[in-house]
Amino acid sequence: MRVLLQFIRFGWGQALSCLFPVVIFASLAITKLIPIPWLPRYDWLLLICLAMQWWMVHSGLETRDELKVITLFHLIGLALELFKVHMGSWSYPEEGYSKVFGVPLYSGFMYASVASYLCQAWRRLKVELVRWPPFSMVVPLAAMIYLNFFTHHYWVDVRWWLSALVLLVFWRTWVTYEVGGTRYRMPLALSFVLIGFFIWIAENVATFFGAWEYPDQSVSWQIVHFGKVSSWLLLVIVSFLIVATLKLVKDRQTPASKDISIQG
Image 1 (cartoon, rainbow, N blue to C red):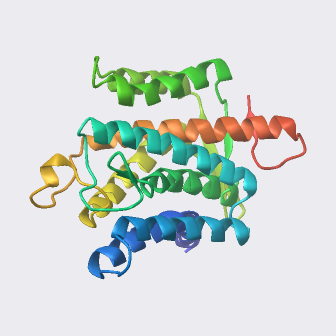
Image 2: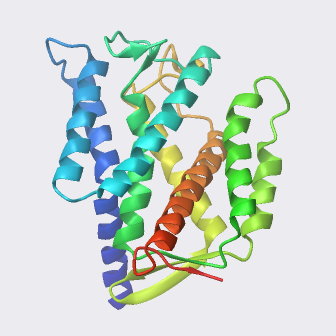
């Protein structure tokens, strides 16, 4: 019974942390099934995301510091979207006033929702990192992973080499978290894989409701190739490294903060 209770507590904490992504998925489904007048669907999605972001900050669910992190992810994601759509990796076939070079601005919020989840879960589960590598290793690794999303179109795709490098850099790093007053831990690399896998599942839901469209989905929807898990895995790693680095910088600026603990 205690194991079941702890699992329910953990699931509830995860569900609360996923509030922003859930709203996005619900909005995708509703606007797909029920046509809304006056504006194209992509524009309604942008307005819903803006309203949700305002409400989360205004209600105190997100802090202003977390909003800065989420805004950074919005810009990083939007830059990636502009490039990938230009290269034909996927497309947004519907009309919209808020589309820039074929990319609707609401798409940046899908990346921002990943950052929102990380920030929320970090705070709710009282996440701590054990044996976190130095900045000199973490920052270049995150930069190389992000750049590979662009450079592999012109050069060799080194994602598997980068994945191996992640294992090498973080093989001694653990993430600990608290559920119901009890602390648990798991290898950080395993947490990357789990989050990446669940985002791949979310990607299938998103494409089913027309969030975007891969070339092989232009005629009819089909499951996203499982190989995309590797892409989401690397994106999660970039997201996690940025959030962890910014929280570490914040913690060093305010030593009394309990927001994060990095143990050597």
